[in-house]
Amino acid sequence: MCLLERLAIGAAILVVLAAPAKMAAAADEPHFGKPVTAADIAAWDISIGPDGAGLPPGKGTVAQGETVYTAKCQACHGEKGAGSPNDRLVGGAGTIAPDKAPVKTVGSYWPYATTLFDYVRRAMPWDKPKSLTDDEVYAVAAYVLYLNGVIAQDDVLDAQSLPKVKMPNREGFTAFPRWPPK
Image 1 (spheres, rainbow, N blue to C red):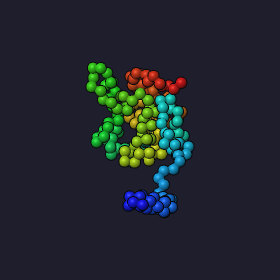
Image 2 (image 1 turned 180 degrees about the horizontal axis):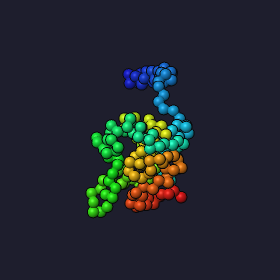
Image 3 (image 1 turned 180 degrees about the vertical axis):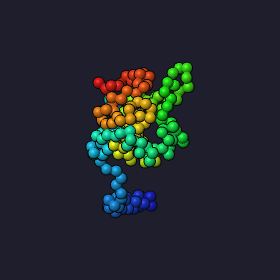
Image 4 (image 1 turned 90 degrees about the horizontal axis):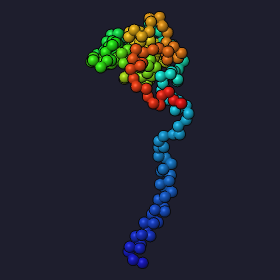
């Protein structure tokens, strides 16, 4: 038997002897991930369409929204949504026109009130997304819509009333060919 054959046989023996030890070590290794359950998906499946499908239970008033806005939104969006340091939320009415410089705010640009709810619920406050309760999101939406003159001061927003809010720029967009779903 030549040296090369001896080395090959020795290597094969080492592989066979090491296999049980390697399998035991693999059993002790961390196992990342787990099967995804329907409940796991439901926690992230929070999209709200223009028709309000998927809106959660809850409600909010303009007065409640002012309190939440002052505590959790004003530092970024300014007093009464005036902007600074981040996006302006209020004003710009009538500026979405070919002959004007657009001021894109919730009240002047956004076509659906449900989009406001969806965005605030999903992404605000920026440093703690998804931290607001559904009642707080309804309330903040009510306050921002009130500041834009879209709803009255005594209006209450909930899953039934929010989709019925007619935004000033609702007709300013080209229809999305896959909406509404068939």
